[in-house]
Length: 353
Ligand code: MG
Image 1 (cartoon, protein in one colour):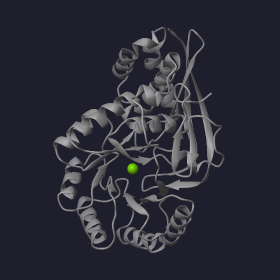
Image 2 (cartoon, rainbow, N blue to C red):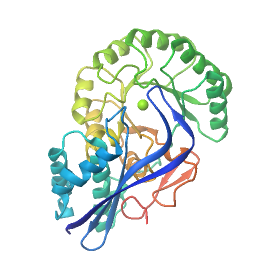
Image 3 (cartoon, rainbow, N blue to C red):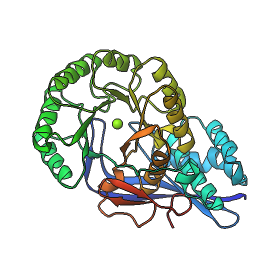
């Protein structure tokens, strides 16, 4: 079935409150939506968020990549040749991982609709719906303490605490949050590249003496694989790569160097579902478990990530709270949220109608 049309459109939706990390502050989810139409009228949908500080892509650059080199290699192709189309997309355009992710998601959606299967079934099927963590954005310790208490009250048992801009304040953030959430809540930390390697070791070792932290994500700058290894060799808390990991090749290098304990996969970094699966498979072969995460993305790409996570047995950590930050919840379809749990639709593709 030939791909007859590729359309892009910019949309934006406001957040209930600003989302802050050591890298950036976001007040709305702005994305480029992609729609692929097959000649029988079936459509597939995808979406890409722009993160200048992480992938280097802007909304205009995402639009230009899709409308130019990517469209060139998908128009008039048979969707049944999905694997080859995705390889052409990969090769015809270097970088631009978010633009590729949007198209990869739309192609998977259209392909699954043509064959009448939900995306998660196409990917292997799942048994336990993903339960997301909830992010506590970077702020003054008292404010983060209040947020954390509120979130646990709403039923989020796993909190991802943003740190990474001030050593003493970071420690105070964790201590204050632990005071109010008790021992039941799981805390994971994300420094978003905000520490240097020695500082990271000091902070993590200090926290180790007190109460359990499940993992620490991306303590040092993205390029510093040696720094991740340096930290991992000196602390007990598992270290996870996020901004250091884009491609399956990054995964291979991080694993070979024994630089990390865990990997955080995001479709916007990997370039979509196919590459994300390759990362999860590569990690599985080395005994390294993965998280599925997302940027501040739309319900379409978060649903794609949730389908993949549900179906892949080596994706065991979930950070998919982006859509829960929206002021208004999107129209039904894809994911139905039950508190922190993402129930996936059994309709074909991503499940949106
Ligand atoms: Mg992160």
